[in-house]
Length: 117
Picture 1 (cartoon, one colour):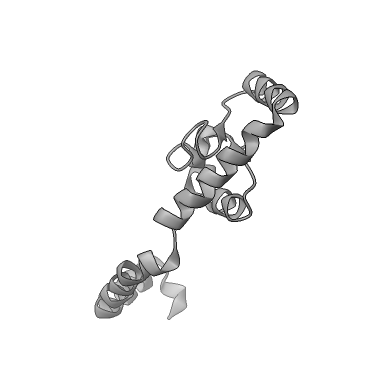
Picture 2 (cartoon, one colour; picture 1 turned 90 degrees about the horizontal axis):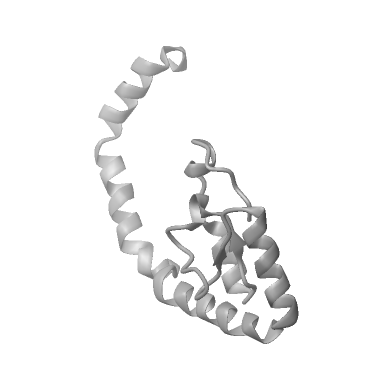
């Protein structure tokens, strides 16, 4: 999951890591986006450059048995930290907050984009 550290890419989510972990596939990613989610060498791998990626791939080619424990740890991390039921209350609170501020938010939007009237 290579991403350059641009303002656009830094707005992306870490969903690709979550999907890989759910399938017990080891994620190899760049620091942009994934540095705050992947625990390097525990739940996946962070590679900042081509040289690191080459070394990592060579290592895993010769030591494939090291992949499964990392993939299993990633799945466990997701089960502990990213399940929907763990986020439901926070998300509901956020939606209720938006609902309660809907008039203010709508007025602010119309000031920014008057052609929506």
